[in-house]
Length: 630
Image 1 (cartoon, rainbow, N blue to C red):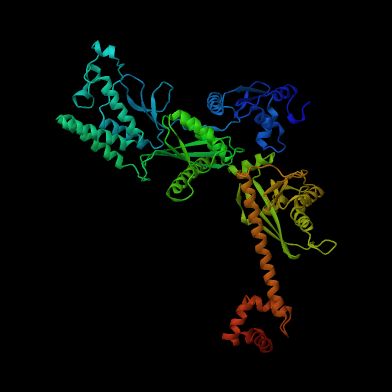
Image 2 (cartoon, rainbow, N blue to C red):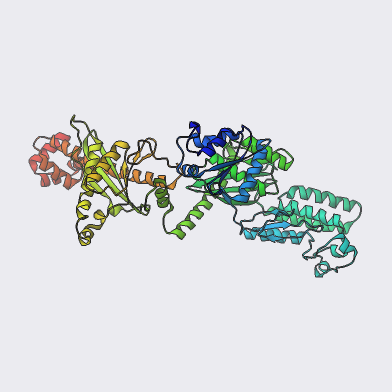
């Protein structure tokens, strides 16, 4: 390797990295077989591409990808907007393994207005790049059917599949059908309706489907008044009926904003390697629909990058861009996206990040809906796989050989070395199994200087837990089954603490011959996961459900240990207080606590029913208690 800055690349790749231009463009990583691994864009190709090989701490998935890179190809562009468009097209065409993958469920239908001289309007589940206009997708098929029925009831759109051209119509090739006679079509096939009039009607249909009902109603009312002034009362009456029908259709749409603006509201929810992007479409202040998209391969991606990919992919396919786009947070490449969207729309587009008020509530509502959809996806996965996703994620994050179906977590609790206890909690398939929990009173808790030693305590509890398992490894299966709950070895051991506690546990497991069971440490301060033999913490994405499972384990072990410790300390404190009373020894104090439960209850009974104390403890002891407390 000649260039240290490009560590990890081969000589051929290193030469390419050294000669990268500082220009905007798109880069493509390939493996040794020429297969595309990743496609990305950059403001400066030199800085962005080299950064992959210069970073010391990479996520697990990214480090795996980098090891596979054997070649990089670049395409320079004039600016960042061109790079963004090129990146989107290349990702859509090649779908590289390590890119964020946006899945818009192809089962959702659209309403299409065909690209023909006399366009047709019908539902479809396939989007073709043929110049037709698509509206949707409709995640609720009932809404799509209602919108389509309303369009057909209000407008006289042809339902035939005839290839209508001005030449074929002039040649008289077609005859009107039943729709013409029942006033469902105005007969363009025989020339009874001009192409201009028909396409004006189609433009009105597009406005209705886009939610531009206010604008459409204004135009139609003006036209109705013009017909009335010219005494064309039949045409005015037809327009009046259409206006009434459109008003009924518009009244069914939920009003969410008094401002008559067009806006799309975006929100993202993520968990592990999946995310759900939700967009709520508002036109003229009314909700006309919502769409959700599932994104995969997002584990190491930032929220900023996921939102950017979602936005750019969505508007690449969308035929309409509103004036305002609501987001949860500012985006790093916001200016580039705005420039691209404004050029695509041919007018200014604005990003809005609301913090308070009704607009912020709208963003929160969309985010809540995204969470519901993501939960539904995760539930579907669980039903299909029968293994909790968090367990699989933990196996992946820690690079374990097998699924950690049984996990045990240990925690130490004490007060300056007194009443030292340890807890053992057990999770099976990602859920707590409380019947297998165990509590330990600890004895070896002080080091040679007389100070509390958590490392010594951890060695004690690990030894006491696994000593019998180590001994039983040389016995028969029948003997092991005699104590299934405590005799079952875990697939993973988690100790609450950093490198010191981990080393103590690993040393004991090695000494008793059970070094084949994986052990990890989870430090509280920065939620860092330590593996044996590694001085640096393991890199696990903070959004991974595997890490969340470890945190739940640690919190449960801490709760269980603290509860046991407090119970012991309280019992010891109360017993000590009774022993301070003249004439009451340790045996009498324990007897009183067992019978009456607490010192407070003894005080109450002395005041209200002193005879009970005399009968239970004797007159002399009762008198001593009364004198002490009163």
